[in-house]
Image (cartoon, rainbow, N blue to C red; front, side, top):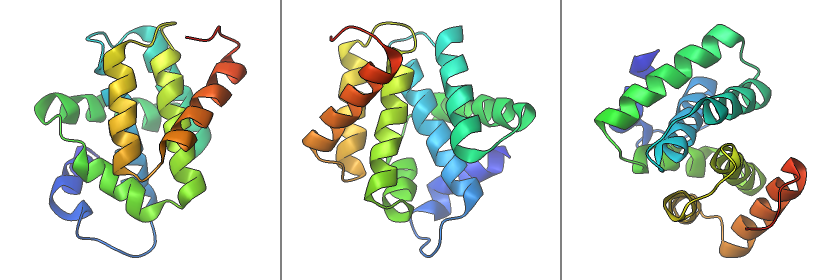
Length: 153
């Protein structure tokens, strides 16, 4: 499974055509883990948020989800590159699904109750790379805040 995440660096950007489920899962997991690690702490709340998001959005079981998150952690620690992962999302998701990805990132950022400027900056960068404009990013954030029932920050 780790190979499918690492393979995105080599072949993910060159591939076109219909989305492959594994590639989308790997790219999403890597971006979500990167968002969780941005503040220097990948805590249990963030891990639980990513687990729930991956299970819900990709219909994964507990074992598949845990393995994918662990592998995404390794790849993010080794690389830190976003381009290959964002390219898969940009090329294979329609506009609504890309905005959904931004919502997932906001959910992870808010999982520990605090969004710091590093997390917000990362989400802004990812939004630009997957062609989600500022309004789409802002609306996604508002929906997450409302869904999670947290105060405006």
